[in-house]
Length: 224
Ligand SMILES: *[C@@H]1O[C@H](CO)[C@@H](O)[C@H](O)[C@H]1NC(C)=O
Ligand SMILES: *[C@@H]1O[C@H](CO)[C@@H](O)[C@H](O)[C@H]1NC(C)=O
Image 1 (cartoon, helix red, strand yellow):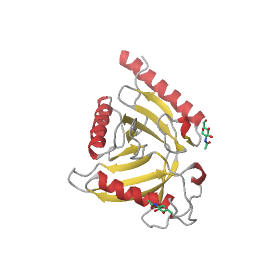
Image 2 (tube, rainbow, N blue to C red):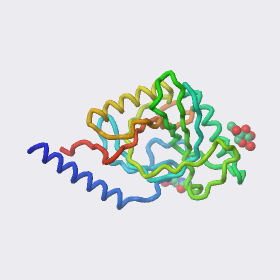
Image 3 (tube, helix red, strand yellow):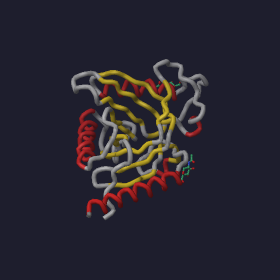
Image 4 (cartoon, protein in one colour):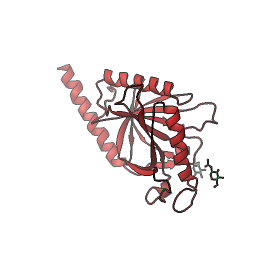
């Protein structure tokens, strides 16, 4: 009886959250002053916080266009460097209009989870296009650089400080996965995102995240 009551309360809250998200849907690439951890770029990807536990946040992101490349490697660091420089060239004038495009935050790296640790995997790195280039960005001159439209999505996010490296990233992704499995959350398991907000020159209060994309209604803590 009690579990039925909790369940119906959960369904009620899920519906309420769905309604709130529907009412607030709008483009969410905005002034970094609206974010506590975007400190080095003019614009960053904003989101609506759906709920929060001690170990993760559920966030809702609007659909957005990103500029992307992918790189196969055994280690994250190597792929990250090569891919970052390739996309950086695109915003640094290597595009059909020869324009400089502002850097944004975060930089996201989609990591394929279907490979064993010693096998090389594909790392897909993306920069968020600033709001003025969301609709009609200039074409990349490098054919390894392309655009990606990420859909409207809910993500489970875990935050950590320091530098984004293979070790810190996989440690935090494993911790997040454990927490999600504990609450029986459903999420896309084939891949996750390593998310960075800071340039290497920032020394203090660095902010990184790992994201798993929710599959179906996100599991939020009980309000009681
Ligand atoms: C961002 O917000 C700050 C503070 O509210 C403001 O001074 C600045 O002009 C804004 N920047 C842009 C690009 O809108
Ligand atoms: C960015 O573009 C400028 C001007 O073309 C160039 O001098 C600089 O080396 C480029 N930076 C990178 C990292 O490619």
